[in-house]
Image (tube, rainbow, N blue to C red; front, side, top):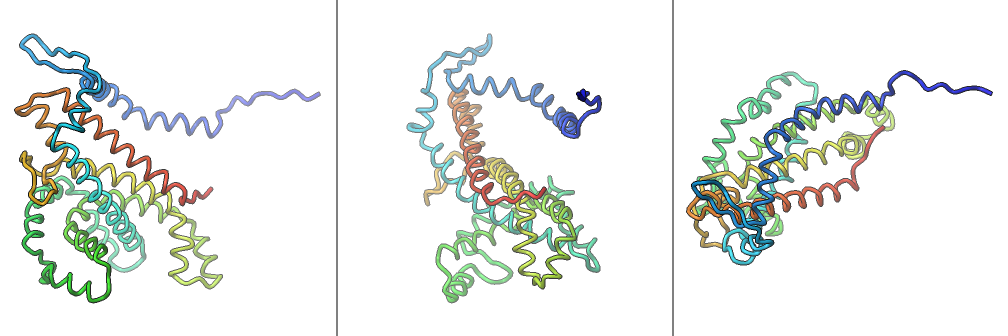
Length: 318
């Protein structure tokens, strides 16, 4: 009877688990040291009435009262939440498509490829300055949209008439105009997704393209049947990253002015309003904490739903 001896070596899966924990350790330490306590205090304050005195901060448990005030009494919070979601998701689609096309262009083999890569990766190197420029220019773009935007010498009304003349539906025309008005924001936010797609394109085995070429597949068919399925996990990753980044950027961009726009769409950033409630004239930490908690939950719900829907079309290559 043969006796089985347990191997003394470490399996590949165990090595991967150890290295995964090592790479996760800096984030874990940072979370425990800097974010765990503020997060717990935010959750605690959301269910309490917070009073600040000379001797310290005192809280009294009030249950769901702060959430009721935010949803049914506060006149700004619901409007900010609703007007934030749709524009963000629209820009997500634009950023992901643009990043994929840019990565395909950068990944090609042609003369001057280094210059093209430098042009696309300058927003990463100078990300802070570009973000500030986009933030500062947000109000200018909005005002230009109200007075009639110019795109390369063509007015907004000229583009509307030209697109309508092609038989394009009004909803799609509005989508195209919004994409044009957000072009600088798209460029500033496409740096990391381009890197993700570039890594995915370079990981596709060349043998698959050789087989497709032998079978007589055109470039168009190769893209849809080889390239796109192989980088579908990168599409999911880029979408989740872009949603997270845009919720953070669009909720904080621009100066806060406590007013309601006459057209029913608020120009006030959401997190700036929450900061105003907590640290402005109200000094209502409990209400601000409840708003912050609902904003985080809403962001997570959007990410989970998008991930669940897109994961059904993701192809994983082993």
